[in-house]
Amino acid sequence: MEIILVILVIIILFLACYLFFMKRELKRIKRELDLVLSRRTNGLVHTEFSSKEIKELVECINIHLTEIKSKESKLERRNANFVKMIRNISHDLRTPLTSSLGYVSLMLDSHMTEQEKIKNLKIVKERLKRLSELIDSFFEFSKILSNNKNIELIELNLVAVIEKAISNHYEDFSNDNRCIDFKTNRRKINIKSNELMLIRVFDNLIRNAYKHSDGNLCIKLNQNEDKIKIEFINNLLYNDLDVDRVFDEFYTVDISRTKGNTGLGLAIAKEFVEQLNGNIKAVKEKHQLKIVITFKTSSRK
Image 1 (cartoon, rainbow, N blue to C red):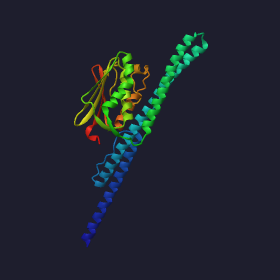
Image 2: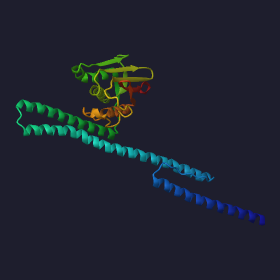
Image 3: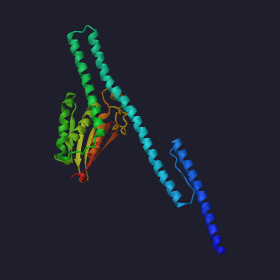
């Protein structure tokens, strides 16, 4: 009987000590967690306690800490991009508007001939047209970001869609003694997609090449067993172009902003391509920019 009592006492003492040290460890973990959260660092909680439950608790805490830090980092980047976006929108809208007001004031305050006034009115018209295009682009991009509707897909001939997009820009290139060279290994390539979205993608890429290149544009379309690949290749005017950022909203090299570029064209193209289950990337090779779009052949139904 005495032996049993001694064993019970030992067990009780062991449990009491175990609970004491566990409670102390939990308090230490709490202090460490409070410290990590208050300092807003990437630190994690640690424990040397041998309890399986304590270790699982610490592991769970660290998983949630990592998720919280990741969300905070994304939020900070998003806020920074939002501030930059507002600044760029303000700049892009102000430029044609200020220019238009300047020409209007000049016509009102000076003794211009009718011919000079007509010339200046044409300039104002172009500036206001550019302002309207900017507003439309901003509105379209905001709709893209908030649109959760299902995309209607139909069977299309991709060759015909690209040729249609090329025809929209044929006159601009011809007037500058430039051309669009379209190369494809097949006359018909079927894909299940959305024609309006594809046209918008190709329009934006062709317009981007026209504005920011001084040479011809080469478009290559090829299909194999695994994928459909479309390449847009044009000469580079700006050596400081960052191909890792060309699809970011409102990214522009400094000189391109003077040409009326908001950086939204490629951002919209990227968003549409990804919504159509494709992939788009930019590659800089010597003095050329190559934008490559791929769709998986196996994904077509």
